[in-house]
Amino acid sequence: MNTSEVAKLLGVSASTVQRWVKQLELPMEKNERGHYHFSREDIHLLKEIHDQLQKGTLLHEITPVNEKKSVRRGTVKSVENDQAFEKLTAKVSEMEIKLNDKADSVASYQLLQHRREIEELQDQIKLLTQQLDLLQNQVKELNDPIQTEKPFLLDSSKVKRKRKNFVSSIFGF
Image 1 (cartoon, helix red, strand yellow):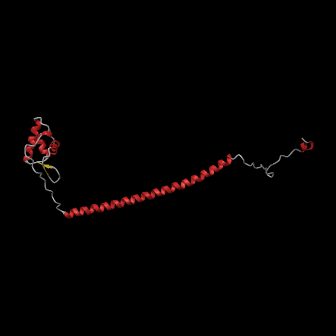
Image 2 (cartoon, rainbow, N blue to C red):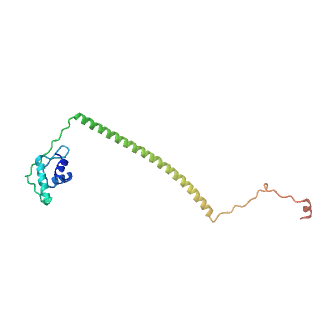
Image 3 (tube, helix red, strand yellow):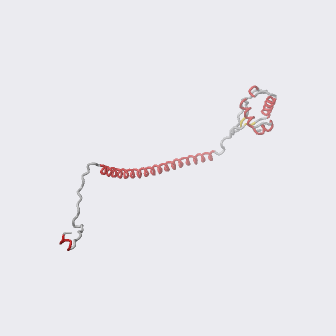
């Protein structure tokens, strides 16, 4: 019987049966998957443990009525189809290699993309630095107190003069 069947028979949960086996270090047989497999003797022993617990005995005070048996182990089935197993192992290895190659190519692409972005940012920084230098020079020229004033020249060829009246020119008006 398996753990859940024994638990139903005793009226307890499967985890309770597992806890009893572990805490009392009962030598129970396990199958190839690691699940407990209980014989009639094992079930009888668990019934006696259950009865003792019902009478108020604490779990750590219980000593199994039957003498301790040697640990029985289940048999492990060997792989029946070695070729299928080897083929599966080869396929998994191949997939791991492909996965690693894909990861490498993705990482390389990302590195190239980041490098391109960094170069673009460096170009923008150079341009901004040049513009900043130009602006600082302009501010410096505006704030320079010892500026030499440039003479203001009028181009006489471009200035139109107003003609005086003949009368006003005679009398000097």
